[in-house]
Image 1: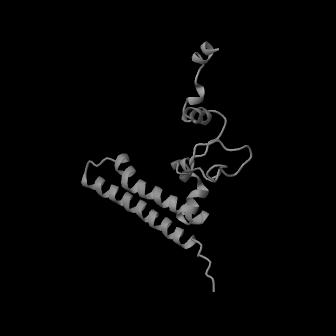
Image 2: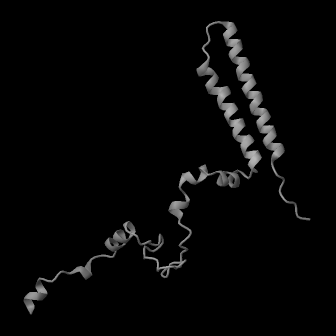
Image 3: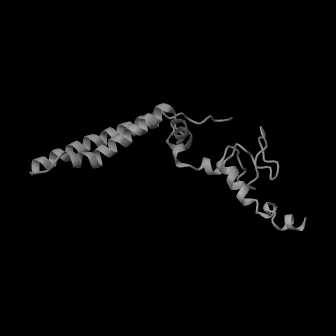
Length: 143
């Protein structure tokens, strides 16, 4: 009997961190606060009470800002105003960068033509930004 006890594996002495890592990589979800597994169908952690829906690691991922409805909320713009904002940004990029790459300057007349193209793109950007300001919804004023 004593030989059996000496050769026994002491798995119960292993730290629980290895079990949590194995659970995190599989199908089970673990709490970010206390690293315990969520119960099936629960909305909150039974150990620390943290919400299951609020996942800070996933919520701070930068790709959520590329979604159109999240941009509307972050910038506080309506749909038409946000489209005008993007049109103004495209005009600014065209004025600043693309005109310089597309057209090469050989003479003074070419230089003046490039500057005229840039002015046209900048005027387009101003018009798009002005349209965005005019299309922006006013906040609801409470009396």
